[in-house]
Image (cartoon, rainbow, N blue to C red; front, side, top):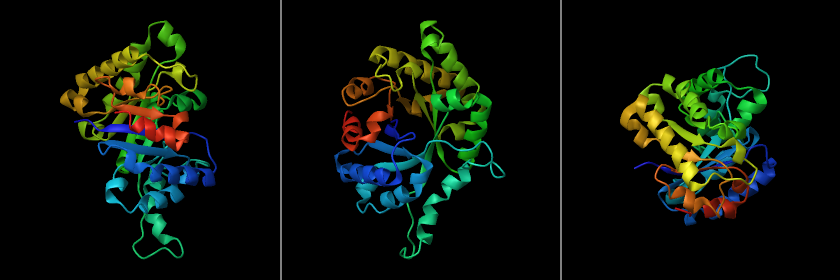
Length: 274
């Protein structure tokens, strides 16, 4: 059975102290989340270290298993003179660093950075990230043991021109088709209709199911039965009021949540929508 996932993308929001307050609020409500639903919090780079410690300190193993930590991006280079970049190796080193802080108990370790979002439309649009660059990033992230949330989706003009299948198909074929089946086992696909991000617009459940089914079929053409095991998330203005009908669709396995992930009560409510 495919993993049900509710992943929060905090984007460039919250100071470190605000982020700590938010994760503490989420952790306080974690018992309300169904056991078969995985929460992923994808925070700004500055927040990863303290939030790694907070998640690692959750005492109840039952609750701790429901939540994972992720980053919002990584570099397309392994190491070097790339000012301002953060490598996949840096991300994978966060958990072990928690135990090096002065006063940390012996053997202390934080929650690992398990996931990284790559290919988000904002990275593609604002920062010119191409499919070739994203393939480099994915390979580096997977080599470091990270799992990838790979985003695909079309702009409004592409949807109106009925090019959405072509656009999404190319983003899959030019990137994911270059991976091995073993690599693909560690990839989650997130469909984000760019026209619905932060606009309040949402694809209808029929529109969302149609493109999710297309994504799964496209993956099946390359990876066979592995496509049935791949979680595909919806990421376009998903909120407590519409999550239930979206998540009820056959090929929608959860959501990549933006604004609603910044309020613990909304994030948990979405997770309880299954």
